[in-house]
Length: 281
Image (cartoon, rainbow, N blue to C red; front, top):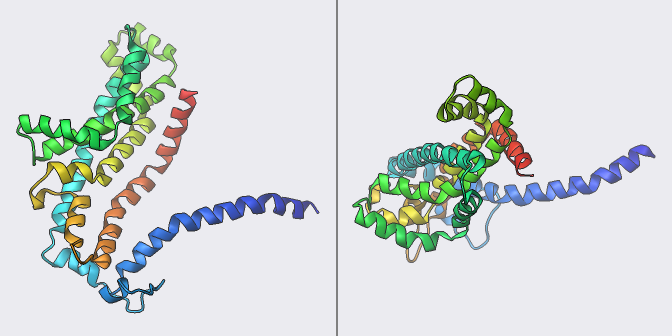
């Protein structure tokens, strides 16, 4: 009887988890199976769940044809990594100021910074385009990295504020007694204690930059300087035809860095998110 009651209690949760898994993994399975289909099967009116003609032609086309897929991949890796490092460095300074600063309007300034995150990208892209035009940074990787950093920095600063809030101030007071300056306390005490937060914030910024379509599509005009999202969009879609097999193969390849990054820092992300959530309560 106890076993039956235990099963009844667990069954609804198991069913919900199973449904959630199916909904979550179905697009991934469809992307993977379509990448191995022929062009005719990928665009058939009666779609098949499993490729009848299993092949690697779509993957061979990515690296062996005229498509500059390698350029798109390198551009995405370089710009996303630099934007992640720059955003985390600035966000750490800003988060420490929001958490430990003793100046007037600190709360209003921090809320105002977070409020800029609420603005949609289409509203920000116009002023950013004009600013980069004045600075002669359009169609440059530096301009694109500045764009990535600008839209991820507000939320990243608030993430770091949450992690720094979790550090007891007594530790910093003890470091001050030992003769550390404010910057020394930040570098030698606060930063080592917020490594999970740094990793979580860096992964957050990297994923946002990696998946961004609007900024590189607007700010970059040279085909070989495009990142993966706009490069694949322009390469596989046309006015009358879309190469679904090639696009799905490219999507599988571009998902690999994010999957590796997630599993490499999974423990740090969970620990960091938990610390940030507790600090925010």
